Amino acid sequence: MKVGIVGSGMVGSAAAYAMGLRGVASEIVLVDLDPALAEAHALDIAHAMPFASGTAVTSGDYDRLRNAGVVIIAAGVAQRPGETRIDLLGRNATVFREVIAEIMRVCPDAILLIASNPVDIMTQIARTISGLPARRVIGSGTILDTARFRSLLGAHLNVSPRSVHAYVLGEHGDSQVLAWSCARVGSVPLAGFGAQVGAPITEAVQAEIDNKTRNAAYTIVKGKGSTYYGIGAGLARIVGAIRQDEHAVFTVSIVTENVEGVRDVALSVPRVVGRRGITAELFPDLDAQEHAALYRSASLLHGLLDSMTL
Image (cartoon, rainbow, N blue to C red; front, top):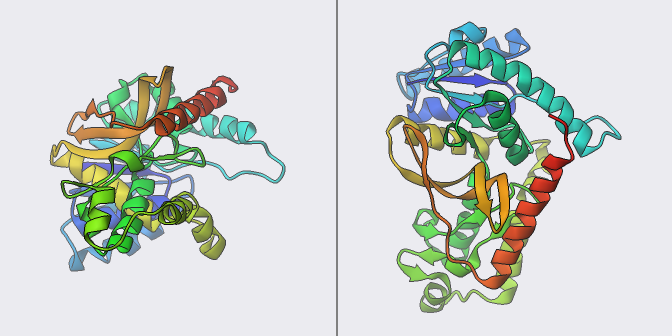
């Protein structure tokens, strides 16, 4: 499957590198407003492929995206000093109008995979601009937050995070909801597993893991300026599930008809991902506090979108 990436900064190039290492695409094409940057990343990644896979990595203009099955959008503008979040969203919406028009011109049947932040709002904007069905406009959502949550739980319990089934729901941002009440390790509820292995899930443990999950990006940005490896790997994993028609479950963001009574809002819940995009969504059993937190997250996102003029 051919995959396009629009926006060849750190996130776009990390996604291309991760896809190449995993061999989940037959061809990757990088497109950027700065063609020299796209070419440089494409060459560098292509030179790594003899050690990894048979993926062809190139760069070019939008016409090179023709016949792509998935196009990742990692393009956007940075926030200016003193600029409000709404102003930034407005400028990014302008970028998306130009980018999506070109993508739809050359590969209207592609699935759009949105990585630009704030990803939930940008996913909703992309769906509005493209006119595509919601199942074909997928935001990376909380896939990385979920990975962080599982990683921290695995470290506490001394078990592989791949055996931890726990989810972060709602916004990829400050209002995200860690779904503690339905978390499991293997088939065992989280609290019971912790008790069995001598690593109880106390209130202090929950508070520490919640804080580290919620604030991981701030720690990374403070140390090196931006995050890109984790989300690059997450995007590669989603692309692999689409290519193989895996029907794998990820917490990704699409425009959702109804979440806790909030209608038509893009946010993350566990969803089934395959060749057609999203084929089903799974609302986990939550406790009362988690239901209320998910409602607040959905309401915040809905209000932010309502404040914009698309």
